[in-house]
Image (cartoon, rainbow, N blue to C red):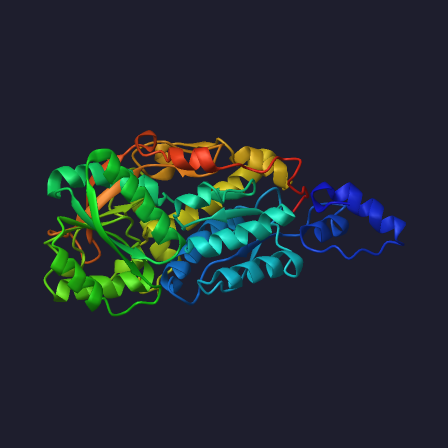
Length: 429
């Protein structure tokens, strides 16, 4: 019997035929226990990094998830069931992500999984999630492949991807700064895919890549790369460098006085990567999905809730990573409510194509979950350093916002091939 055909009825029948003994675990085990009524909590596995290159972002991601869950639990949970979580460090390592997902499902018995910053880790988790049919929300990794060739029926991608951010920035940067570009790229999936998206747009708009420098994860000394950039003299450096690597890069670029010439385009700027850096380190133009000083309804209240729930965290205001973790979790729980069930296929169908108003998202444009790729299509912001901050944490100046339709990743749509509902295991969490 193939695993994709196993559901609650099949499991119970098989167990009875074997004298009531079964070796299946994970979400299906709940179905046996809860046949008389759903009184057991809904259990969610938080698959965020607590160590490695994205440890800071992983902690921020997790705080966003927990705030959304706390809000639901304060009003009685979902469908009369409280929400419990378990967290295991994915270590910014794909192999660990895979092991964590297996343990979450088979031993911790989670019904849903949420969290990722590294695209390699997210891809590893999603392969395990699809095998079991467990809905997985990739909150913060942004390789185009996550909603493209590595898409899955159970996976939903909540961040903007490298192609979205490149489309918002590249054409304008060629006009403003020049057509001679160098690429500075973290040497793993997200970096490569983001650089490829940038190359494609440069070809389209008349720019030229004179060189690409690959930066291994864990790089702390950028002197060799920066020397190559100085010698080549490009108009623009397009950097796809993240996490702690980016902190080191920014510090060394600023020390060498290279922040204004050449021009720098950082594909995406995660708040935990720059929080607390001096203003001179925030050179260039960079992309984000949200900022705590957006002049939009709900933003100030959201910041106040964050500060009330996390009074002791050193990061005194929420950023885009926290925002993505919160929004993903909130919308998962809302989808369960709309479905009226924790059945995974029913919840998937509630998420697919779901439209989220600009007001609910605290963005400038309505967002929606693309039913073809399962990526959230949303407002993309470009920002730069704020030279006239109104408070200590007001680091960014938002220079533009772009609607989802203007930056849609058509390449992901062409390469994504979601598994069918029939080929996805079904269960009630």
